[in-house]
Length: 230
Ligand SMILES: [Zn+2]
Ligand SMILES: [Zn+2]
Image (cartoon, rainbow, N blue to C red; front, side, top):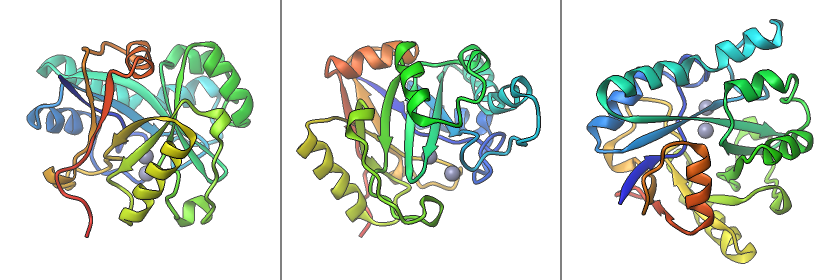
């Protein structure tokens, strides 16, 4: 079995993160993971990328955290994959299988989720609803479910402040028949070891397309943290 982090932020790109891409790559290597997906907040959320730059420059800056993690991963022997956390009015959607070139080719794709969805899916992306029942100010306290617009549900998120939000996500996935993932939503090196989550895969993953194929053929299972919240 292989172990992957599915939900991770870097200080280069996510304004709420304190650990750099390289620091996180070293941490996950130490923790015995085979790979990590860097899923920084996109332009429609808590990004460090200024809004008034040309699209291409914004994409370059957006990819910095991933690229720094990737360079360190290549050096130390940890697989690092590109992902996105796309925010749409109360819902956070993890996106796998796209890349920097795709973003360059789709200017303003941060503006309209439904159009983004269609274009991303057409390019083979996998969309997972992150922490669907988190109640947070930045989500305006809104719980927004869009079952027709995602491929799966993150049923455990270690960044959730309440364990019940994870239980509700399990209920949602079960009720709607979704395949499921888990992730740490890691922003900081201070996240305790027993709170790390992710997925176990029966097959080795070498990119977003692989991950999608493994997910859709039921070779992915959630990796729950050793310690749940009280
Ligand atoms: Zn964040
Ligand atoms: Zn996140």
